[in-house]
Length: 580
Image (cartoon, rainbow, N blue to C red):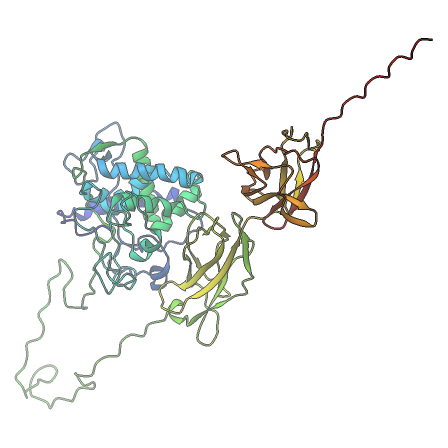
């Protein structure tokens, strides 16, 4: 979460309590059937290490700002925001560059993933909750924040435990990860979700254009349709897995949908209350600090050495040696390993051969099993599948990374692969989220589009007079397993004979762009309906029957006869018999 704002004076406990009650009242929009792994507001609330370290959220479930939008009522109501004159109009203002980034991201997603229906107001709602719209719009002309916005280090002290994944490249922390930038991505998520939103060739989580576009793609994965409440809930929970977070973002989303306006960069209102208010990021020593409002009791006065008193006073007694030597350290409390801690390696779980034609979905899916050193399956472990290398093959939904939890049999099944247009080998790497064990590589193959059948779309005879032009053009339809074969490469050649596929040197021919004679056409492709219409054919002065052969990738072949013959002339009528 965006931290280190230069804290304003905290509001009193009563204000915090009112905000907490208001958030709790929003439970009507909770997504059914989704477990809540969000932080509890209590100082002693410790997230489950397994859920926190490996739940794959964009922010690592980092803290966020909990200020609510103003209440809409006929009477003026005080705003929960700390800005001067915190009215609804003030809260509705979004800094110009930040607002532009949100709207540009919506436009880009409308083209890239039209079925997602991403509203820019959702990005605004998340940006408000995560960083107060980039600290009220403190960005430069290119959209990069004036200073880095960093969440607390995720070291397990009141927060998730996520050890460093980027060598400090984004967050400057070589020990633990921290959420970075106006949309608060943790480095491990940014590594695959990052986008270049301003066209400068870089993917910078501190740039609002890059971060907003990345957030849009993140929210639009898994074929989610954000116009459907169920998918919208799932998308928001995937950003920060907390019901309170979902409810809060929904409130801001509805607020911005009712109207907003542009304000100058740096003039946006700053939030005040955070979900970790009152939490202690550094564990305290029990007894070292007395509770607030209490008065420490004075301890017993020390006695003179060698004169300990008897109980009830009077006389002395010889002190007994302590039962436990004072310098003996106590044993550290035992910790229970999480399922992820027990994983020793990954094994293939019976993945079949992965092959698909360009543009098609792979019919088989990758299955990976997490196992202990003894070969025992481990459930509830997150496995990340990453498509690596230069390829346009993706998972269904257009993403190159997918994270799946292992089932009770220890098996994680990756989403279906969607082949791109680039043919050749594709590598998918499976790794364990939150643990360093060797990855497991899977090989998939994308073959070129193919057809197994070619037929003419018409049956008109193809004839021409010597030196003339054929009246009809040749059109064929390609199919594969009975389905339309679109985008299939084809070649057309006027061959020498049925047994000799070399190009003929006489007879019918095509013309190139310069009008020159050619008898072989390559680089042809069927259209979206599997149709291929050849250019016009011409004939030289050689009469006879000739052959045109069309072949496609996949082996489909069709041979067509062409006839070149002089037009028939009517015979002269018989002359009259001579008169007698």
